[in-house]
Structures are given as structure tokens and as C-alpha cells.
Image 1 (cartoon, one colour):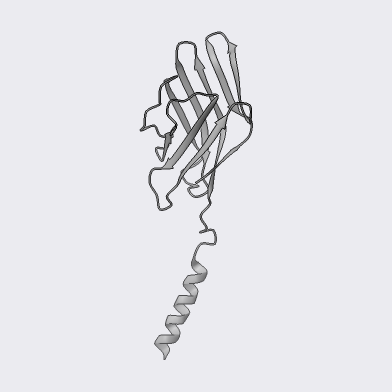
Image 2 (cartoon, rainbow, N blue to C red; image 1 turned 30 degrees about the vertical axis):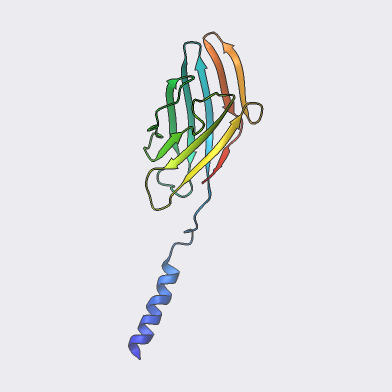
Length: 146
């Protein structure tokens, strides 16, 4: 009988020892999101990922440089190496494109997409200065469901 009582007590104490915030979050935040292309076909993009499911890995910067009108490398990752950056619709036109992020490793699988279109919170300006073809930025914090 003592064995049964001890087993029940051990089981009850392990329930209370479990972390309180073990709930999976279904979205990540993207801030400081901007992009530009030059008249000599160079494109750059920058954003910061904040992932509540991986607070030790984020925030992390994500930076891309590629030839505008072409697709960035399929193996592109954020600076911490934990998020693939993809554009599932192909070559990026800053006026309208889809951004995809996928978590590379970890116990919580994540993959999400968000579509951006100029004229919404994603604003683009044509020829804002010499040798800059287009400059765009997101005026808020973007939420991506994962």
C-alpha cells in the first residue's frame, strides 16, 4: 500500500513541476522589415524574427542580397541559421510577393507564409534617390502564422 501512495504522490508532484508556458504559439513576429533594389540589379532585404516558441534563438536578423529579378538562393537562412527564407512564388517583385519562413530544427516544427503587396502596410517608393530603383518597408510589426 505504501508503494501505491508513494507512486501517486510522485505523479502528482511531477504535474506541478511541468512548465506553465508549454503551450505552442502559432505565430512569429517580423519587425524592421525593409527591402530595396538598385538600378544595377542588386536587391537587399532585412527583417528581424521574434519567435515565442524559441525565445533563446530569437530575435534574430535575417539579411539577403541577390540579383533583383532572380530568386535568392534556396538555402538562404536567417543569421542564427535556424530559419530558411524562401519565396515560393519565384523571383521577387517587391510590389507583390510571398515570404516563407521554415524552422530548420527543434522540437516544434514551424513553417509559415505571408503575402505582401505594395499599397498596404508594405509601402514602396519608386526611384527614391539616384541608383535606387525601388525601396519598400513594412510600417508595423508583421505577424506570420506558423
